Image (cartoon, rainbow, N blue to C red; front, side, top):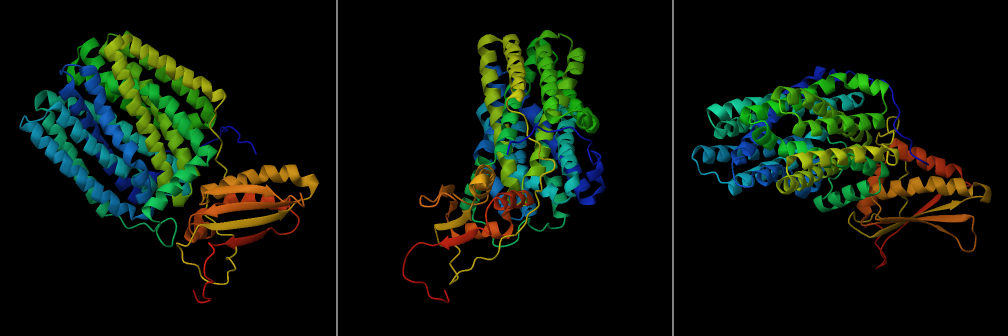
Length: 539
């Protein structure tokens, strides 16, 4: 069954509808404050390095240090967010970041901050971001109705990018008058406030009841889900093709402000603020855009807008004019990233939601870190003008691939958790950790339905791999070609039981029923355990 490209259609909810939910509104305001502190921190860190020898590469390394932890910790943090109390996890991470920010501010004020030490503190704060991102993204979805998830994701983009319109400008003023230590201290305050807001929220029940998964198996399950989901992989590819060239702006904008515009930290803050303003405007017009354009058309238009802004960075000598021309780039950034984030949040089942979002964070952070490093080195070797022009060309080339790798349409898929399989009929009660376990399903298919059955079973096979099986293959009986056997291997009995109790979705059920419709009679299942001494009937 081929996936179709995403169709256009009106948004069912206003972009601001989730703010009517009290808990979400409180958390969103806390996110705005924290995001302002983070952008102030970024400006302070980059500006401390802008006068150092080899500033192009050093300034770009701030982005690398901030994003690298996401590559290392995103998958474990996503697994933790799916198996732990997300609220408590977020509170702990906020307090850790507050301690790091206080130490950073104190050493900066004391004049003890070196480039290496600054990058180390930036890395530690990035670790906090890596640990909190999937937990936060999954947590807010528990606060709003499913119909408002896309709007909640867009508001998350407004918080982060709107903070960019305020934080850098304020940071530029504070740095110019007081110093970078002050903005680091304000960032510490934002973490404390965020923790206090989380303390005031009620605990949210887990998406899937039952025994929590173990960390290692949860990480492996998240890997399997993404690896066997063509839809998720396509969304992640679109993120990579947009962020990789777009990273040139975030990595080298302070150098543009300093070397080309000679506008100082205030000018840098104004330029970042323009990008943030563009994101806020993008959120305001997003419902209008989604109602009139398909997701793939939005991808192409966003790439063209961003490429134009990239060229403007090195061809416009007026700070005011460049600030205006960076507004479309901010809009494009929000259109692409929040659009894909919203689609992921709607698509991912609750049991693997944080792990799927952590893969988005890995791709986003990896693309931005790699892009920042590459464009920083290219700028040091070839200069700013060729670097930004090359980034614009790469951006447009990525947009051209939409024709071959479009975003799939997931709007009408049923992602609700369902438990429609009967309880396994066994002679004894296996230990949950017993394994590996072999599960087979026997089908009898008449020759005239064979092609349709094989096509439908491919989707069933991928469903089994996404939800727990380490291998799943369809075999034909050599003595009777009308008999097919689906053979699935699970690492433990517990991993298979999770398919019975909440990992499957309404879409999985629809696809399985479609495959079963081509078979004669009901498929027959069987469960096989490692051979050993005969088990006692009472276990």
